[in-house]
Each structure stands twice: as structure tokens, then as C-alpha cells.
Amino acid sequence: MADGSILNLIRMFLKSGVMVGYQLEATETGSPQGGVISPLISNVYLDAFDQEMMRRKHRIVRYADDILILCGSKAAAENALKVATKVLEQDLKLTVNQNKTHIAHSGEGVKFLGVEILSSYTRIQEKKLNALKAKVKRITKRNRGTNLEGVIRELNPVIRGFANYFRIANCSRELKRLTGWMRRRLRCLQLKQWKKPAKLHRRLKQLGYKPPFKYIKMRSWRNACSPLSHLAMPNNWFNEIKLFNLEGVKTGVLAPYC
Image (cartoon, rainbow, N blue to C red; front, side, top):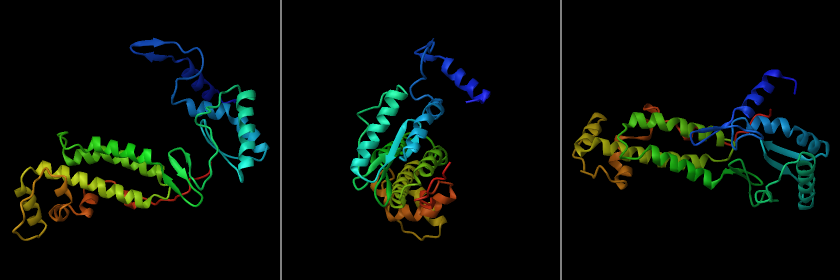
């Protein structure tokens, strides 16, 4: 590398030290685990690996230190694994994580960077969906004391980032299910904040619906998907209050080649 600004940036990161508790400790070797500089360092150091694998006609996909080698048969995959291990461990003096390194068939699914790649389509890994749901649950808790506008303002960056990252997968059905589930949680939150059925009934009258209306429990999860809740808070209402619409995300999009 001949770019002085990049070299200075790397040097500053490597010599910056780390905080252990309230104490600053010097870093003598390597970079902090999970540090923001890690992808850049990986790309610089593993360029030799990329070039060697391409020279040997192996098709690889790499992000930082996550590597996927595409082969046409099990024998070819076993050979590629031996070659890759030799280049990484003998030439570059790195250690291959044997617990994470394995050979898999696309018919059974190959897990890589949060997606599961199968022979004819890709899907989001279950653990990533569960992690998103856990975040959404924390943001939309009914006892937080935050109004609906504030909750949506906090929720939007989370679901927008998730959708933009995973839109390469064939996940339109999953995003539709997530959207319905999130709308129900938000309806449940709004019902609780209205507190009394009278406010729900007033909303229905404003929308042109004629009484009498049933009295429902405003804190009930079941009633969040009741007909009255849907009439008072239809799907298009969430677009009006600026909830990011996962159903509008185009999925199965190929990432641009860089």
C-alpha cells in the first residue's frame, strides 16, 4: 500500500490502545476484537489470499475474514479447503477456525453473513429474524411511556437497516409476516395509550363509522387484531404516520459487484 492517509489511519487505530474498565491499556500487537478497523485490515492482509485462490481458479466470496469457496463437487470442495488452509496457515501465519469451517451442500443450505444460500433461492437465517424481533419487542414495550410517534421514530432505523441488508434474500413473505406482527404490536400500544374505549370510539366516528361500538379491553393483546382495532388503525394509516413499510422493499436484489 502506498496511500499515506490510509497507512496513517491504520497506524493510529493499531496504536490507540483499549479501555479495560476505566483504564487505558496499550495495544502491542493486533487490533481489538470486532474493531471497526478490522474489515480494512482484513482486506489489506488477505489480498494475497484472494490473488492466490484466483490464480488457482477457485471461485471465492469474502467479507473481511468470512470466506465462502464455491465448488462443483465434494472432491473439489475438499481440495479447495486444503489449499485455503495451507495458504492461510502456512503462508499468512493465520489460524483457521475449525469449529466454523466446514463443507456444505447448497441443497441443505449454506449459511453466510446472516443469509442461508440454497440451490435456487436465499433466505434470512432464523437467528437473525429472532434477533430483530427481540429488538422490536424492546422498542414497542407497552410500559415504556413513549408515545406512538416516538416509538416509530426509534423503530424505523432498525427495520430499515434490516430490510436494506437482507433484501438480497428471497424474503418477501417473511417481511410481510414481520410487517403484520409489528402493526399488531403498535395497535396494541396505541390502544393502551388511548386507555378508554371512548377514545377508540371517537376515532371510529372521526373515520365515518356509525355507533354502537363494542367495548373492548384496551390492554388486551388479542384485541389488537380485533375488527375495531383494524378499522381505527388500518394498514394505510401506518404509512401516514411514517412507519417504514417492509412490504414495499424489493427483495431478491443482487448486490452490486465492487
